[in-house]
Amino acid sequence: MASKKKSFFKSRKFRLISTLVILLIFLGLFGALVYSAKKQLFTDNKHFTLRRINVRWGVWWKNHVNELASIIKVEKGKTNLWNIDYAAAREKLLQEPTIEDVSVYKLLPDTLVISITERIPRAFLRYRNGNLLVDENSVIMPADKCITLPDDLPVIADLSNKKLKVGSKLPEVKGALNFIQEVNTNLKRVKIKWVSLKDRKIFNTIIYDRKAGRQYHLLIARKNMEENLGLASLNDLLDNIKNGKVKPGANTINLSYKGLVYIK
Image 1 (cartoon, rainbow, N blue to C red):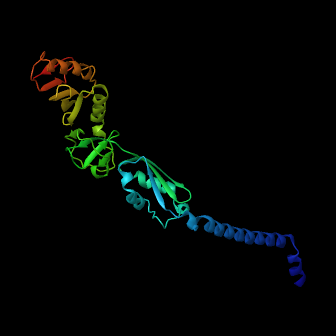
Image 2: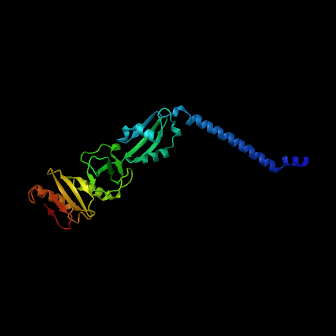
Image 3: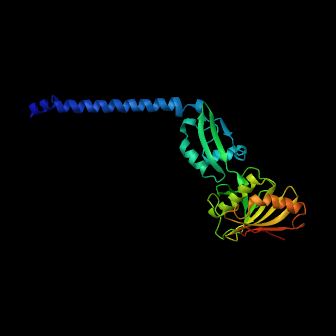
């Protein structure tokens, strides 16, 4: 029996097991050493304690640094820059309806940088000066977390009766937003004040002609606006009304019929 035990301790199997155990012990000690060094050099190093939060490009959020810090759960004077999960912080901030894009990164030794692209409000939903807005991508936003709003921001009214959820997209307003953008780009004399979505084929709108200083009720087909005597003809038409050549004092322009214009 003794000879068998002796032969086992001298066997190749025993040497292999012994080597493996020693290797595991060495790796464990090395890992503990690395972990300890990492903590001392980085995650527990007071030199990398968060002292400043630098918000870049943001407008509304630039003045609400404390709220940003609360959202991503960091605290000046306590949080170590190496303990922040930057990818998770970015995903958390992207859940804010008024933030379109954001990057979060450290600037050693003690600064957290948050670079924000905010959504630009393009219209009120339902009511002027209400609490809901929409950007060009039809994302619903709260008015109390937006950049400073223009005084003449248009209203998109007569929406479906479904509950409007902040942060979600509202596809039904996309056509109206495109129409507003088209007018803003190609007919700068006109300011759209109100757009109704009640009729599925027509934009029932109120516009303001800056050149004449007058307001009109405008009806225009939703599709093929150019073909249906749309925006291309509207500029000349407004000039003719202003100069008294067509229906002086008219307040309604109907361009909803293909090839026809009704003014009253």
